[in-house]
Length: 210
Image 1: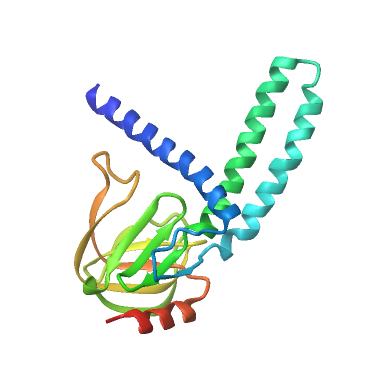
Image 2: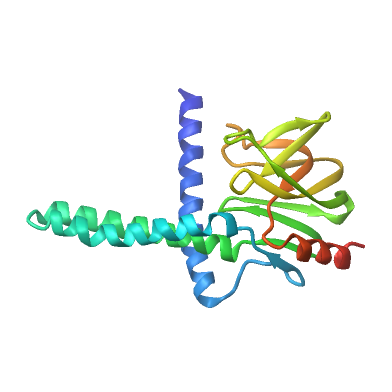
């Protein structure tokens, strides 16, 4: 019973954090203030999913007046679906804005690796052994955490692909939301990620690395 309550509480906290970041992302997009550390350069990673997200946003927007027309004779039902539709549309817009305003970042302190609204992993330069352009296409629905040549590997894919590999000097403990009932702490040695501009990303690494 206690474990079940803990799991429910964890899910509720995650949902609240994501909901708040949806609105934060919209606000940052409107203000044109992406969440990038001082002195760092941001690199986006949304290109493989941008078209899909835009299609969903358009469909969500079209769906609102259609459903409203269907349930128009029933005010209570109409209000319910109207609120639900507007919330869903706002959520999709916020998710797209999150990709714009929460990019990967390369700066004086190291590399900040991100994914969506939850994942944000700081990799200090002292912990980084190498950064290389390595394109990998994984099987659909492959686990993010795997072993590669005996090394613990974290893959932050976009459409099953990554194109940059960061090898660490030593295992680094990171927290991944939803991966473990006690916080999702894992030791990783390699991080693979997708960057829309890998050449620019590696150029920034060469400039910033001590």
